[in-house]
Image (tube, rainbow, N blue to C red):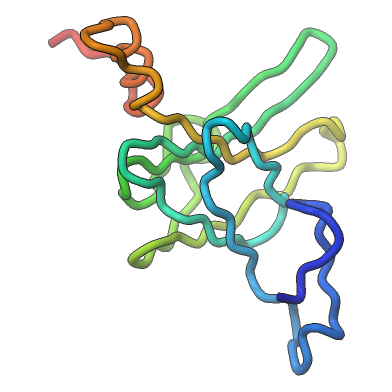
Length: 153
């Protein structure tokens, strides 16, 4: 692989490893395990993201920090081996171009005016770790994260 020196956004393309390339290949990101925590995604780049494994929810979010705390904005999601899909919010314009196992998406660039602490993150949730027996709160929490929220039915 031509990607070296670090992980995520800190990686740099080593052109010596990419003989004949006019640009570095698109990076592939797998949904992290729930225990690993979020991966920081490169802003302003086209990336390939694997679909969430069975029983898992994988989310793409924008994390913004300021003096009053951190704000998490939804960008996209994949769950139970389904294609990546748009979610309500500021990023409904993003298109996910999916194949059998993964999807391409253009991660928006973060404006220079925004804080340097802003980042796009890839995070996973494992439904089997959260649902125990008939714990309605755990089921409700998972459905809140994996769907568009509660309904009146």
